[in-house]
Length: 418
Image (tube, rainbow, N blue to C red; front, top):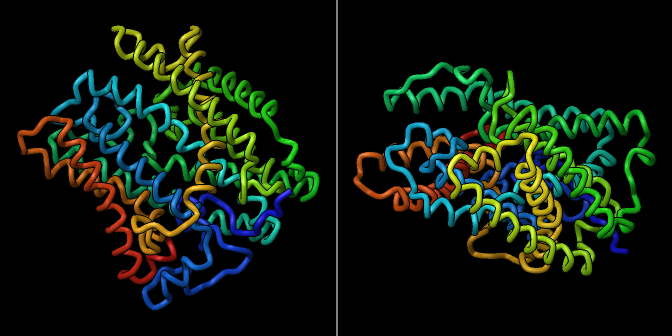
């Protein structure tokens, strides 16, 4: 059994600074490095961190940003700019994206929650319940309230009003939290886990023998997530709004499942190395699920009137089949990619220098500002939607990281938030 490394918790390991320092080697914390200030030394900050996690973090955040940029030019109401787009991606382009990119895009968020679950017990063990809860409220709660309740709604209102389509902040009947649903969900899961540990005790509250987790357990998890997703989407359809606050509840079954899996395997050294046999089996299962999902996506997007039925939910075999393929991708895909990252990304790359890695959380938080701005700037140009989408995605990814680093390194106090 591989001895697990100690380190801070939360999604800081993947999206930046939720725990102040992210995933470090050992329990060492460097306050100057955490801040990311030029004087404190971003190189010093990076020296104490796990390279494969930082590199994986950069890739995942870039994929999320690029995906939102492209979706903004589609008929899918999954990104705010799509409501006011001036050109639209062709049906062929959308079908290709669904068949090729969507299967693997679906495992991005579950992978984030898997890593969060892996790191959370280590943080709680080190800090204790009281300090853990206080840090979660500070690092996750304050950014969530600030961005979800103030910055994001005002940003959307400014976008719609500028383009002649003013809307009320609650026009859809619920508060749109944008990309911050993810932070709200992580905060909720973390607080529930802390309460569980407080009641059950540190040794009974979490399964320490993660080495026992095998293929059978992953298959059972896929089945459980499938059923839960199908049932949840009867009330909250895929990409549907809840009554008061939009927290993407239709994604919670997979998110909870992967967060729980991370906790279950946190004591077995999976943060250092996913068991090789399980990694290979997960790769095979992921590819099979990707093919199945691609077929369902093409079927749903090419038959008129079938799209919402396949993706939304309801008492029908199609939503159940979609939930099954999605759940298999979420579980097996996350395990496989984690194992690949440990083997392939554990070194320094030019595209993931310390300043870029340090800026990932900020890039995630600032993507709305950058992507909306680029899309509005390109709006007068008579270009096809495919060209604009590619341009906004490419420049947007670089712009988000650049803006985040500018704020972190130049504006006092920002490094404590981003």
